[in-house]
Length: 268
Image (cartoon, rainbow, N blue to C red):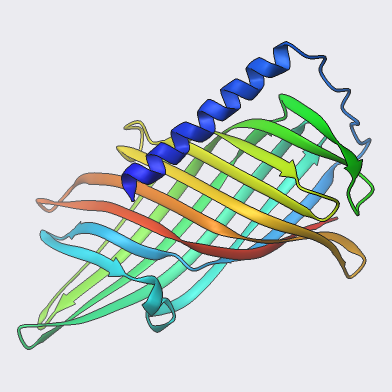
């Protein structure tokens, strides 16, 4: 999974560099910059399984919440993205809060691992390449292919409670990862569209390394008279973090989250 995600990230970045090079050989489009900012609100549900290892209070444990047991282990989840766009320039903020519980029986003792994860990402993107594909969408906009490099930061806070029989320990950690990435979008026809993005970050500033990749198939329609893009896709987020020692113990979080995503993007 880690090799696949890194390969996907590299492929997306290579494609973006190729498209940018192509843009240098053709006349750049004239952006139809709106006089007002557009706001796009995107609530979604990410059915992410968790796989990896954690070290909490001197105790090492496997983190294993498979997709088939998501709803059995999920306590609470809230997720969404807000984008602010004007012409080729845009800003975004994405937030997630997930609480899960993992129970296992080990040598007649019950192991309980409660994890609360809060992740907030924010940054900016800029459209460096746009190519009109012919035709218009149901929103009366030209069908296009676009490339948008992005810069941002991702703040993560994790609180983990581990108990095995009479033993229990609680630890929490938070860190911030800078990241660089790219967003790609293309229209298939007046309603259907594809979108993908990938980023890589950490670089030792927060986590040792983190990467995020996601791709979506979208369908344009109107909800409550608002332009809306219904989306279904898949997302991978990997974080390898090792915190400072506390009472002689190190907090470690080396976990990959991956799974299907269902949501919508409504324009205001």
